[in-house]
Image 1: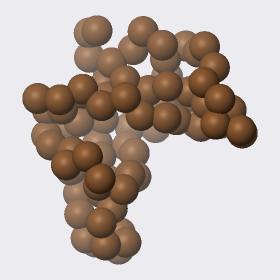
Image 2 (image 1 turned 135 degrees about the horizontal axis):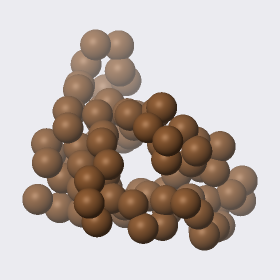
Image 3 (image 1 turned 60 degrees about the vertical axis):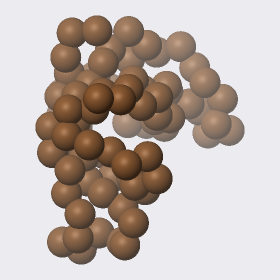
Length: 84
């Protein structure tokens, strides 16, 4: 099991934090696996890290979907918050 640190644009932060957004579409350049963990780093429009509500949150990958309309090399990840 790996823990991935991923950038997340600030416009999506609140939807992830309150559980409305329970998925991520990502380039599969990290070999994401079921059960891996994600720690999000919220960034602004220039890509600069900003302190946020997600700083102490941890998410588990609950599903990895490939194909089905996704561009080759991309995945849709189901995520849920877990204890950090």
